[in-house]
Image (cartoon, rainbow, N blue to C red):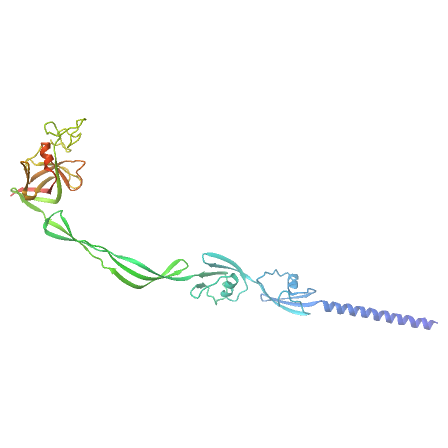
Length: 372
């Protein structure tokens, strides 16, 4: 009986040990079949991991890698892990692309500048300038510029300025001028090629030039005669002025000048006190050196108190029994209607002045008078 029971106990122990061994073997088999050996190659470093993760992405997250969509992962992130798996990981880097007047920020895994532009969605043309160049490695400072290069053909007008030439004329008096040739500017049309870098003109090339109108110079003759001889005098003149002459009276009682209800004269208005604007008595002169005519002038043309010499066509003017001859005059008065090349000659009688009308007269502004 003892031997029987003793033999049965031994068998039980053997069976129990075998069962335990099988369980341990099964657990070991499960353990080693469920675990994967993963090696990650990232940015020049090697990382190893024993993991239960099922996919590439899962093990990378387990290992603490913060992934971006732009990162390069091989095998693909969704691929299941093998018992032994090697993974390549290249992290995307941030880049700034300046183009078309704006800035685009992007992340990219790039071997060259062109790759970064593709990631950024920035297109370029063969003539554009890329800094750094397309085939260069991405710059360390992460900044890339795309300069748009465009060309434009335009036509531009160039003014060819004319020249005003002054030519002396020995048959004309000082102060007199005559245009013998009216001038004008010329015009040239250039066909120009403009090269823009973005919106800035960097190159200008003249492709063709055509003169469509020649410049024509203005030619003006000016007088040089500086002296005249009149009435036994040698008269040095500053300049001569060709004017239109009218006549007026002093507007004083006895002049016959009509007055209005306010007592203002038709010729001199309220300034009918018998004196000129310079304070001289408003009396008709005789045209002599000692008793010159009195005239009203525009001071911008003939300065007040200037001694002048009046030269009428033919040497004199006669009307209705009255005659006025060439002679000296004093620029002693002004008038609201006397502007520019115009003078007013004073006569004592209103009707004599009235019938004088409007005449041509050359006025020599005197510099010096000598008896011949």
